[in-house]
Amino acid sequence: MSEVTVRFVGGPADGLVRLLPAGSDGAPPQRWIMRHPDGTGSVQPGPDHLYERDRPDEAGGWSMRFVRTDAYGVSE
Image (cartoon, rainbow, N blue to C red; front, side, top):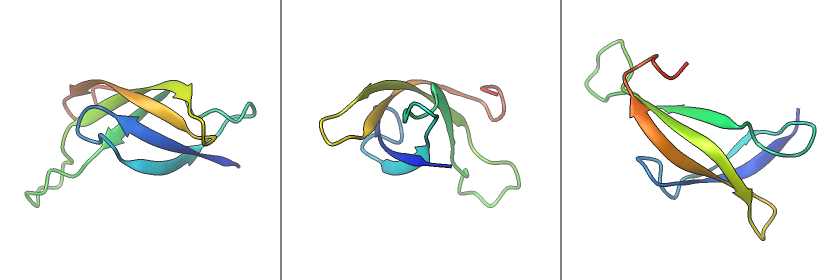
């Protein structure tokens, strides 16, 4: 499986750059759920942050734009 570099824009992951799986066309998934632990030591993670594929950049990567934050598991 190939990967593509993605920069997250907006929301809690703003500015984060990471590798995501790439489809056969070289693009990242249409939607990506960013899930972060809540940091309080509980078993249940924190909220889900939904991002959508935006467009490729000049460097050959892509951007994913913030859509919304939902309670844990709601975005799936």
